[in-house]
Length: 183
Image (cartoon, rainbow, N blue to C red; front, side, top):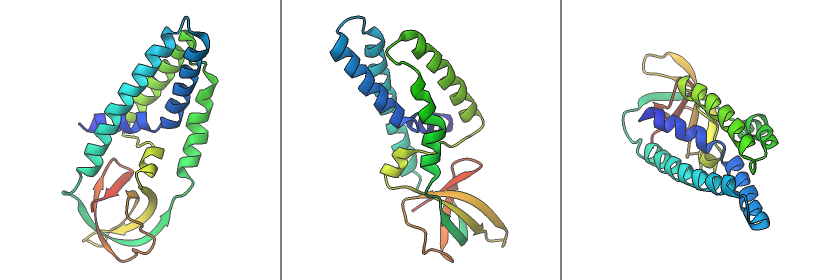
């Protein structure tokens, strides 16, 4: 199930692009009224994949209530620009494709799936604006385990952690880089 979770995170991380494509395709359907198969297929696929991904994410994130490792928070810094950097670096360049033309859609899908395969294969967690809408924040933390070994992790949490230095938290890894606090 973990690869489905990673794939869902990857797909959902492009939510601003999917919403923009939906707008472009709906506008094209209302304006042109002919030769709109690309737009219709695109709309159906985006909605189906979005719903499936949202269900998988909600089940995985809200179902993680046990099995974490206990750490003490030594230092913490909220990463406030990480989503903006992701949107500017990865999403904005994809607007160069014309999503009303089937050949541009094919080129986009080749790029999207090759990049997605590499992200999922290498256990890459995608920064995700949907997680921010659900109330999650991203923090860079220095943690100490029970053996007094200090590690650095990027934590996602619904709880505000700015005043939690010295607190003991239970953390479950999402991948090699990111973890989440189990509440």
